Image (cartoon, rainbow, N blue to C red; front, side):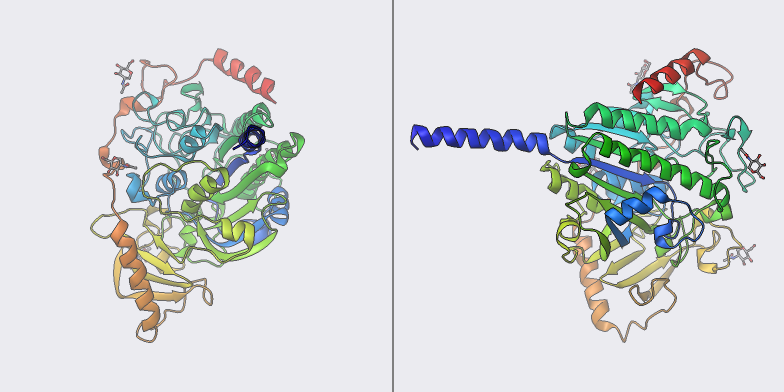
Length: 519
Ligand SMILES: *[C@@H]1O[C@H](CO)[C@@H](O)[C@H](O)[C@H]1NC(C)=O
Ligand SMILES: *[C@@H]1O[C@H](CO)[C@@H](O)[C@H](O)[C@H]1NC(C)=O
Ligand SMILES: *[C@@H]1O[C@H](CO)[C@@H](O)[C@H](O)[C@H]1NC(C)=O
Ligand SMILES: *[C@@H]1O[C@H](CO)[C@@H](O)[C@H](O)[C@H]1NC(C)=O
């Protein structure tokens, strides 16, 4: 190469590399808790109030066949973070508790770790639910996040105290809505507890302030990844005075309206900081609605059953992809899932995924090119995974075969009208499997005769064999047991434990000034 050409080449290379670093898109995942397929206005709910999600949907792409990886929280979130079906990650069966010894294993690569390696600033706000462990070893800041603020598990895994401003009690319809033997819910900032017990009426403001502060600190300076995992709309419902009694839909509707406001604040901050055209935002939920809290839980719309069940109501979720000028506007019925976000984000950002087997499939063709999904099949793992039983159902194209069904374990009332969803409807096997055409029958009502669908069954069997040839599960982290001493306590060594665990008022004041300084 001549010196002249070589100079041009170097300048070109410099611009490419430098330009690419500056222009790497920001990534935001907005993840709701126990929000059902039928809960948003855009999915047909008549009395929800979700103006900000409506706008996000009208500017972006609404997915109508998008799945979470599990009908309960911890396994679903493990899959979102790693792109791997939950049993591979060890997050099974069921969920982690504040006193759990285990958590997401450190050898798993999270989206945050991969993006941090690629030069991103990484922040998380909200519900983690992938473990706390001894000395907080499993908290987000030990899994690739530079910054974390939130209650690291569900708001019913602690005594219920105040849910409404200024200090009105929670009013769940459950006799025992929360776990009174656990420590009061802590709000962590990184690995420090800044508020215990968490004051739920002002929690959403804390979450928004932390998220907005993180965006403002990085917008235009560093590419950033924000994982915003709302505590809403898990029971017990709560809201601040601006939202309580403001919707037609009662406590759930008020909580959803408050979540929607958090979404709106994030979206307007992207516009204010002029990074909206360079930010990929994806909204979804971890699992279906909590039917056991009746009107105070969500709604799966036309889908069957809810949280805890592998019927579609337990796992098919509202989902919106947004990136103005990049992601097409409209609606798609293409098949996709939370595990697909990991490889999609790697593909958008050029980050490297690590060496673990990834179940996710890059969604780019659906998002950017209006092309068919590269995903042909999907595997439904139950809330209570048992290695001797394995997955419960498999979807191939529009067909779904159930090899096992069970009701919503403890998560659906025993008196629920549809018997198969009931909490006391125990697991049963189906041979031949129950077969449904989800395009013609999304509610899974009309069981098809498998002998008449022999060609479909052959394709489903091929998808099963293909999946099974790659599948291995990791030892259960949930079954490692519990240790009361690992429960997060702001005043270590105090007694009587755990009710004595509290932050001093001084620390609360510190938080107030800290939080107002960020906005
Ligand atoms: C946790 O902290 C305690 C007290 O500092 C220490 O004795 C213990 O070894 C730590 N455990 C781990 C796993 O770091
Ligand atoms: C909301 O309505 C309920 C039921 O009418 C009432 O008990 C409660 O005080 C109201 N809360 C607020 C903050 O207005
Ligand atoms: C579940 O409980 C309901 C209400 O008590 C009862 O009527 C029903 O028979 C039970 N179903 C099963 C499968 O045990
Ligand atoms: C992490 O380690 C466990 C236990 O050795 C193993 O089963 C699992 O496959 C490992 N995960 C990864 C991503 O390497």
